[in-house]
Image (cartoon, rainbow, N blue to C red; front, side, top):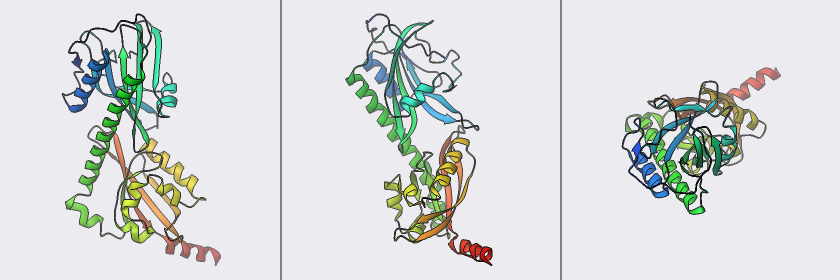
Length: 302
């Protein structure tokens, strides 16, 4: 992998049409990367999506790349798209994961290269990053250039969110909506972030917890706030395990209704993956098990 970022001369190469990665179709994202490369006079622009393997290890996945003619790709092997963050890129997780811009100049065997990377956040979580390389001359990235990259990253994040919503709508589309909205349980679709941000919530949630579906979708922190404080650490840990490993979520815990009453919830969820096998969101159901818990308490007392 070419991670040589550094500096030499301050000259900016002349702009030419450039080429797209052979693996990247001529889609809007590829066109956007090409526009960024030409606008900034860069040599390479790449889009990376974060994914986790079954062991919870975080990887950067090259989803699209533009490069100037004659400039080699990010990876030495053009068929390679994945690279782990650990151990060489732990600092990237710390900086980009904190929604900060990462830039550096590093002298490497391939030559002196400078780069800048901006994080892409979706549902308040770190989805990936957009990186721009200068492979022939050192440069400092100005505020205007970084602002342009942030704007493009924001557009990509919005597109990812639209795709997620389209997938969610497909799952609860007209064919299944009557079933989803009439079964005696709450059906939901969550983003794979620490707050379990809601993409879809069935209307039964209002009867169960007193909150309208629109309130869940508008407030990413509502789930954690309504979980009982004594159960919150378990719920957070189970959600993180679910997101990182792709294994099922299964937990009984207490929640506060909007009117202040406490109910016991049984929460079951599974990871939904896209056609590439990459986790996209969590599909789950919630049941009211308050009466069952009260029965268990009576049995334990007797």
